Length: 198
Image 1: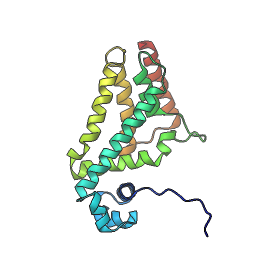
Image 2: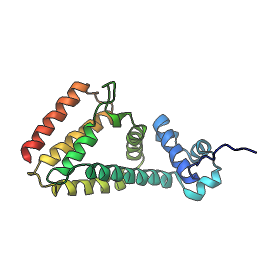
Image 3: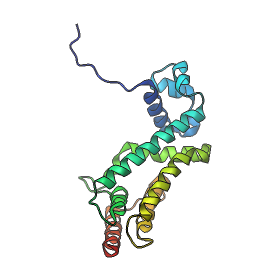
Image 4: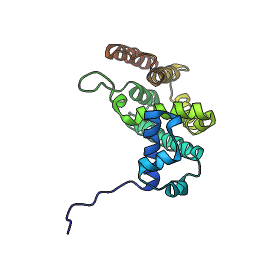
């Protein structure tokens, strides 16, 4: 008799989505096939088709799951900030420029594989069919509504949001890698802007 504690394994749908994300991160959208996703998830092709009838359906589900994750992380970030004007902007600043890891080399969220996968999925979806990004666009539209209602002078919240997006895009397209000093200086400048606006 085996007395080892049972481990909870994700359901088949979640395993397929996780596998598909891993494939896209490693090999791009061209490497994503239903067969490869089923194999990497440890499910049969029929089991995969039960949840996702096509590659497009699989990509759509990945983007919707990512949009939900983004919104959840954003809401948690806002709730962690004290109430009052600039609450949303402070959350975005933390999200985009988080604290450095113990070695001071990269921000904590940049170490999170989920964020790296998100970047790969964005590129894959845009390359395959830009309409697939609509769930992400909807979440970002809600973020922007919150920025507009954040109690700051016009443009301040948008500047912080744009700077955070710029850092993400630099990583996404491997355009440049800011040094820890550059990140800290940029964050300090934005914090000064935010404090003056409040």
